[in-house]
Image (cartoon, rainbow, N blue to C red):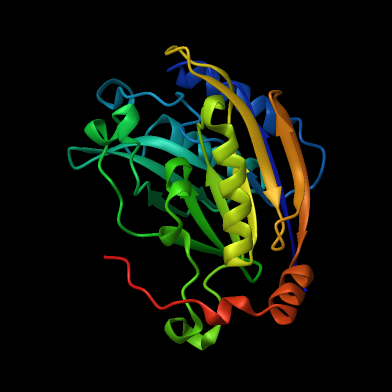
Length: 266
């Protein structure tokens, strides 16, 4: 059964300085010695969680997306993280899933953080992105989406082609403040257990220009809710190989996912 190797980058971000952040991240990526297949960056990795898209957002052929294409191609990896994007007069907090051949998929954050006035600056998405790699199905979400379990919920087998689960791995990229870190850690574990999948949560560290502190607490969790990796407070680059065999054994031995309620997201 195919394994999947993922590298997470927990890093400080320089406030609203795309050029500096991209340079910093490229240095970290180039220093990775372990062979990896997917590199996961935090939410808004080029700018920090800024509410100034009018000044900072770019199009899909802008600086950050072109950087992602080049870095993905040169390193032969899939690169993902979220970027401020302007499209048709609207702004999106958009996760980009960049392949080495320059093709990409994207997901626009559905749940906008009203407490931080994200909903006043950005438009919400309405469609999930489930990517496929080596037989793994990967659901890609952003930060505040974590608080809304229906959006991440595995559909019951009656509504999935072939009677199988929708995805095997759930990835959240985030700028999640330290003051609410207990919720972050608890909800990531809950998503792994309730969806019987691996979960990867990548958060930033440091303090932004609004004096909001981020403690990281990036996590990788197995389908039983066991923590495989956890790092708080410090910058860290971690590479881990996830085993499909453990996932399938868990779902076969404990087929709770088959008993899920049917639902429809409006």
